[in-house]
Image (cartoon, rainbow, N blue to C red; front, side, top):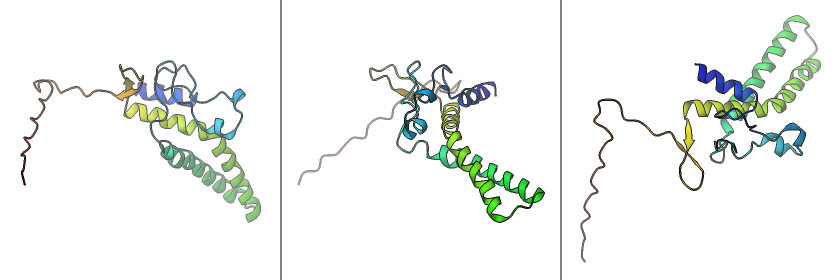
Length: 163
């Protein structure tokens, strides 16, 4: 549980989930476009942990975390306004939709960082000793008393057919 909370804390600070030192995104002062705001860096230069592994990697973060949190916020604002002030529908829509849009824009980085942290917690990757500097999934260790790693199956013999 301590490791899980540490990863979530690093994500909320927009830091690498592995080392906790380097930022996941371009710093706000150096952000020049919406692309800089929404796109994480390629990976951590300190520990080599990749932030995005394949195209579409962050779809779950956008749909589940960012939109989910925005929807919950909108529902809470709506319920609070509807049951206390009873505003007209136009004011109610503006009072609900404006904070949702702003929240989703500001929370997009955090939702991606949370997704990276959750992914690392459930599927840790460690540095590949190869030349390309990539990361590989953590190797599975055989259970104790299993007699060591499984032996490879013999390759099937191929039969040559002559016509």
